Length: 390
Image (cartoon, one colour):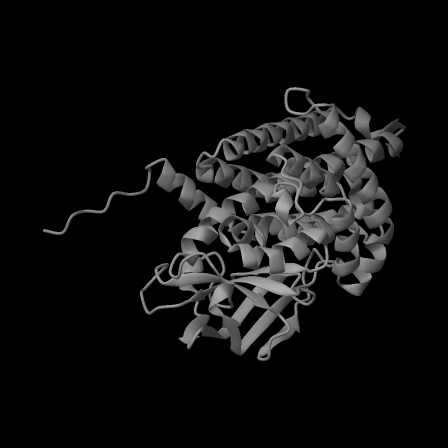
């Protein structure tokens, strides 16, 4: 890695995280994939003990108070794991379910939920999507209605990562009848409250070691103190959080792509056809060189986003570009590398098949490619002009 971005302390941290992945994640991947989930409480407790779950959060809540470059390293290194399920669950804890709480929650709320999440004592999940509202967040129907000093939450959430193991949720719900995004609020919802239930654990194409659930809320009561930020500002706060989530996805994706390309290089060096290694085929080594170039370009775009994020700039356009490019490039890498593996890439006992399945989510989760294109078009002012009615 270039010293332009990372110093000796960064690199020492990188080696520590890499060792953690090699000793605490990779040896158990096959077991977790078969079970359909990884043990989040056990793994997060180990990570919390090493200070890995609150790198950018204030020290008063157990965080490390360091800049986002350390978080970028963490994401890159866990993205090298042998399955994408555990890295996704970790990223939910660090970059999806807790940022809005850390930035906008009250001191009491942060001490009750953020601090234990940083320590690895509580597992968090982000509850935004619904059966009829995935990328279209403004269409959510889950309600939080006032009842004295509390809110009663009713509705359902879908595609919830860490959903079967979460101790609390960062949940977006409607709090008024205003149409669209107006009138939504964010809440911390403990999952031990009466009326909460896991309706179903979903059986997915990929990320099999990451538990994904449908959640139900039937008059789930939470105090007003559990609201994050002002009432009616939930959508705005969530849109800010999405930028960090999408940047995390790009950083995870870059290292996953590079790892699979490197494995393909090794395979093509060892596999001989017609009396010579596959890698000697000019098309193959040219194509691999091309993919490595694309991955490096994406890495530099992601690093540019990190710089902007640290500087407090609006990174919406650039992060959307990185997310879009990452999703499409991961599909290209998966398809090309599987092709170069031939039949070995098609069997489940080899990691190529798993990567092929896992990589497909990046173009869907956290905002589909089409949503990213719409955001980019809006920021570049290239949307079609509406004709004024006469």
